[in-house]
Length: 223
Image (cartoon, rainbow, N blue to C red; front, side, top):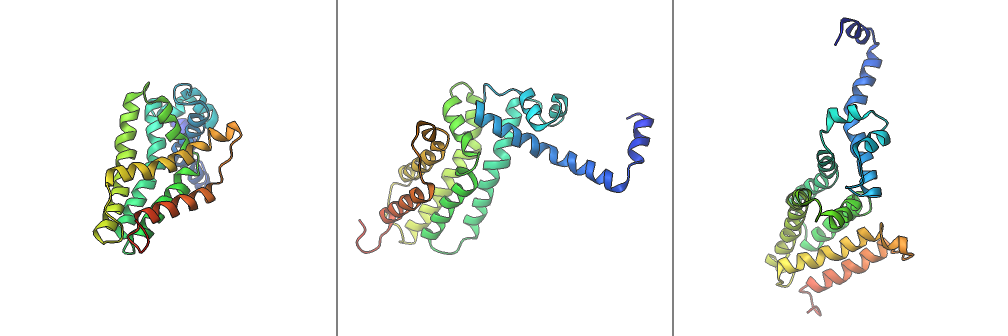
């Protein structure tokens, strides 16, 4: 930095310096928010870094100060959104001391509230649509999101089985069955709605959880 520039910065009032520092600290999250919007709207292949910079209101050079490629930006979007939600869910699983039924409901509703009902759900649609063309990103997503999400559900199911709360089931197959309807609900927000088919999320979730938990229950009358 030149001496003139240094003098200019030093002449800023403390409040102005603080505002600039906060703006700089906030910039990565502003960039990932803009990237998420464009990834959902256009897909990964069609999104360009200059589009992201323009959407965020910064220069492309500024974007490169934080992310050196579109792949790095995509990973940051996933880490800030999906991975952060999974970390919180893993902590909830560790701290939970109630029934497995309560735990499973909380995990599934939490996923919907933090991911499925938000723009982050569009990332799942993007992966489904474009994973063949971007296998490295698909592998990253599988390791960071899919494996961890499956592990959460596997642990909750096994906890219920071990406690005698859930009937014995094929855990891996049941994880698949649990995920599929939620994934369908999430991507319907970006697909079926455009075809004129509206899905009421709360009614869908209530019916889904009632059927799932009845099917798992070892209670009287359940098979």
